[in-house]
Amino acid sequence: MKKRILTALLTCSLALTTVGTPSVVLAEDFDTQIENKEKEIDSLQNQQNDVQEQISSLEEEIATINANVDELKAKQDQLNEDTMQLQEEIADLKVRISKRQDKMAEQARDVQVNGQSTNVVDAVINADSVTDAIGRVYAMNTIVNANNDLVEQQKQDQKAVEEKIKENDAKIKELAANQAELEAQKEEVATKQADLNVLKAGLAADQATAEKDKNKLVQKKKDAEAEKARILAEQKAAQKAAEEEAARQEKLAAQSVEVETQSFAKSSAPESQTQKTNVTSEQESTPTNTNNNNNNSSNNNNSNNNGGSNANTGSSSSGAVDHSSSGNAYAVGQCTWYVKQVAPWAGTYWGNGAQWGGSAAADGYTVNGTPAAGSIVVFAGGQSVGSWNADPVYGHVAYVESYNAGSNTITISQGGMGFSSPTGPNTETLSASGLTYIHR
Image (cartoon, rainbow, N blue to C red; front, side):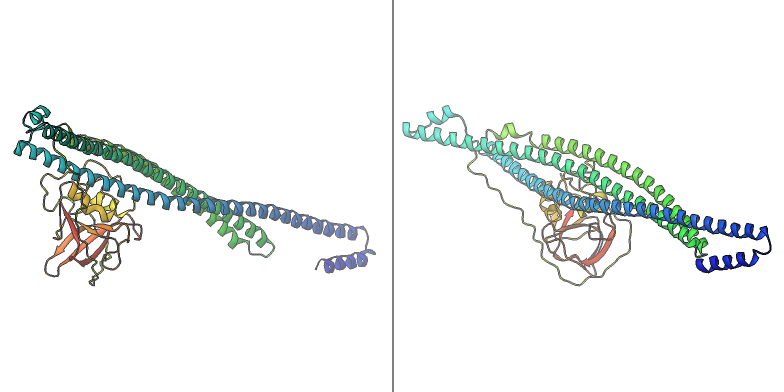
């Protein structure tokens, strides 16, 4: 095309040579315009090359940030696993402490009722012989040592619970910090991607100039800039929400440590009396909470209702420990976190879902197989939850919104990482048979 223009200009120039000087001026004017256009095209090409370099650099940054996001997600999964393991260990220790405390109280009552003597002098005086006296003193020494060992084990388990609670709180804080970092990385990716879109839109708009189609691409560039402004506004709002959530989690963690420490101090008060009791052996057994797998068909109810509308209803367990003021120390998005939100009276450190029955019984709550609205339903590992099965290791817990005696079904609300809304409520209607219920 350029050759044709130059040839035409040359032909015109030669043809007009005979006319005089004005023809030379006209030819020089076209040459200048062509030269200027070529310079403009060269300048545009250089600009496009520079923009392409920026695009390549941004794409590399986005790839690096995405790799960081993947690492943070993996760390998030591990932290969730750690908190669930700590909850399980804390719950086991609390149940063991509760059973040992009952054993020590029973021994103290036995001493008072039967009037057993622990006085060494009386034992020697009442002995039939020297051999009998030595035997009695030895037996009493063995009993005292066993009793002291029991008390020492109680102290060690209580100390272990306090340490694991602090460790769990640290994990929860780390989980929140990691989540904030993850969100920040995602926001950075979104920002970089928005910048990249703006550059690409600008580059496309410049390239379209020669193709007479610039208007559409310019509008795309404006749209990209508007999208970037929207993302920045969302980031600002998300950052504010993350800061508020972190502050809330820190406050709840401090409250839970204070409440649990006070609870352990009260539970260890009778230790001075139990040091005088007779102990022959320490027998511990795991509470039996039979959770049969329920494969009955169920009706699915996926409507979102306000979970916790019956949070303060249900039968009362006299003497049970009310944890309403302890805050929620479970990880956000877990089934245990949701139930604690809608039933604040539930234990702060009852472990994972499958452990809640034993933990609740240790805290004095009524645990049985009788369904009731306002109760907490416990699913054993792998047990049917209507349309799905509970985790084979950790089990599951949910809140009973209502009970239909005619069809013997319960409607539950629940949370968990497997739902589209991890923080709930997610509803389900299923058979009420073969399940364990915790009553307030």
